[in-house]
Length: 181
Image (tube, rainbow, N blue to C red; front, side, top):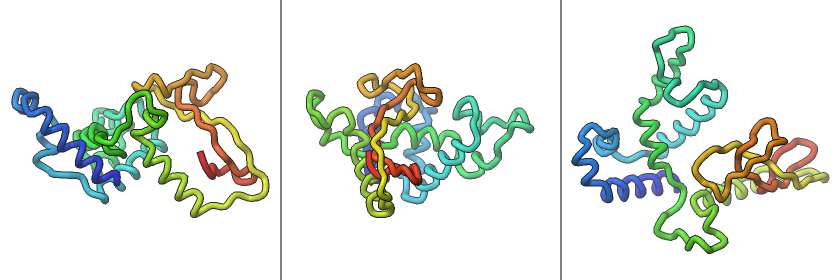
């Protein structure tokens, strides 16, 4: 699903921006056209890439390829991905078909772009984990400072994420695992 939607969105973006690409011969998008579509293996590698970013915090994404300060270097990242390819994957990364996007006043509109991802997570969680006897419904804040004002909230009392998306989660009290959100 992610591979197909990402490739479809990239093709659509490239088709709709031919004039821009003609004016900008050094755009990194030309690299996407030259290297071709993404694959399942590349999306899985990108997933591993972001897990590693979570373990090794830097100021911004470009810092993972910075080799000017050898004591701060992280050679694992450039060995697995070029910086331009990661930024292209992020530019085109899609989880749902834009052609089927509901109208802005439709209840499904706000989460449409990630609805497939949420449904997949919930399906996998329900198939692989069965909560014990005691469960809890609690709010959870996922840190996010992106450009989605209708989803983003500010909660000054939260220490780990003051800006983000608030979710209501069904959690197992014994393990702390999220069973559904």
